[in-house]
Amino acid sequence: MTLPTPAPLLTLRNVSVAYPDGHQALHNTSMQVKQGEFLVLLGASGAGKSTLLRSINGLVRPSRGEVLASDLPGTALSSRNLREHRRRCGMVFQQHHLIGRLSVLANVLIGRVASRGLLGSLLPWRREDKLAALAVIERVGLLDKALARADTLSGGQQQRVGIARALVQRPRLLLADEPVASLDPATADTVLALLHDICKKDGLTAIVSLHQVALAHRYADRIIGLRQGRVVFDGEPADFSAAAEAQLYAPPSTSSAALDNVRPTPSLTNQPKELQPC
Ligand code: ADP
Image 1 (cartoon, protein in one colour):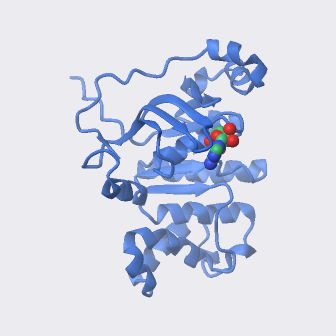
Image 2: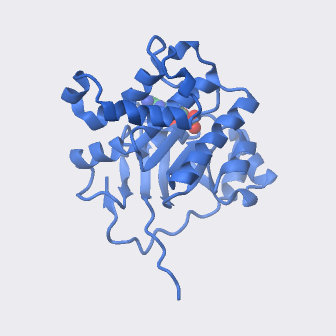
């Protein structure tokens, strides 16, 4: 008996992004992301990785095409849908965006603001919020630092706080924009291993942009290579060869050779009917 293939959590259909200054950062990009997948985005600076992540969480509106989530009711990009989608997208940033003078606990609690609403966030934190925050702080191995000021922590510890702040939202999708780019190689590996381990244990879908190809090989279920706003590789790490890597990062002058070797994006025909734009 063949089991039905589960619907992808996320589908991008012909998404293009042009910024107000006219710069086209993403060209006609289509992809599907499976529930529980640990997807790594690779590409040189300016390739469009952040733009792709930002269009997935609704911070950037595609100028063409659509982003669809299988678990949201409603119609195209309604504000209600987008709010719910964002509330359940955890974001981890390269620069952590922590408030240095606040404790680790207070920083992690900021991840609960969206679920409490503006009014609720003006009230003292509820016991359940604090317990939820402490639980994720423990998961990232920082329980003994819960009351320490964030700016007294090392870079790796600060990124663990950034991960905890995303997790306390109870996201169903985790988006991480170069989360280990500012860490030394050993710490980068440890922090990414932690993130990967949590995602796999929780069945959490993750899309993570990285500069380090070796880390993509170690942790990705699938790699998407972006070059000048186009997907030029979409496949398993084992298929991301040294030649594919050289093409992905080749200077723009050799771009035509690189773009000749594009691997077609998986077909987006036969979309499940329950997919709804978010
Ligand atoms: P990456 O994350 O791969 O470094 P980005 O998505 O940040 O790439 O940027 C893709 C391209 O879009 C770059 O050429 C960048 O300069 C441009 N870009 C990014 N943000 C903006 C913006 N707000 N306005 C205009 N151009 C932008």
